[in-house]
Length: 252
Image (cartoon, rainbow, N blue to C red):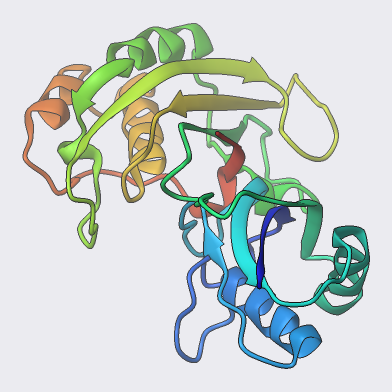
């Protein structure tokens, strides 16, 4: 009888066309399935807790899969590490109850969006942060963000192409924190916005970040928040670049 394994994976999304398998594209799910199939000698389907877009990174994406072999989890991690290379790293793996489902059982997710106030992009950090052209008042940004905390219909912050059955989500908190999530802890230049909620729509975090930055730098009025919350969608506005977004945690 096959076992169900639960794994946590960390990846640099720069050179991937997102998480989900796509014909003719290099994806994280596809790379994992290919490596597992090579070890197992048969196809293996991986189910992730959520889809990250092209260029988006993850510190702790969770996935599950059925595994026929009696191979120990730590041995499987070592085998995968040799095959996947530095862009994808398995952080943990354990046997899960037969009823476990990476998507359905998730109770909350945490994302971080990293921004930089450096005068020019850093060549070693540019793939992990959105470099802003001028200073942003972080206190003002934090104040504006609190208007999105709570349970709302976020259709107006959802990009077209979503397959979500409902656009109602609850954001538990939005915090502004000094420093990046990876790399040198330079809190004078880097800062991040951490979103915690019960779920997020297609490009929702990037769309919220883009809107708040536009308001904070005076390109649009703060009434834009209420307009987007009242809108049936899809999102109309600036979408923050994918490279600054990290899936930080999935809770169960």
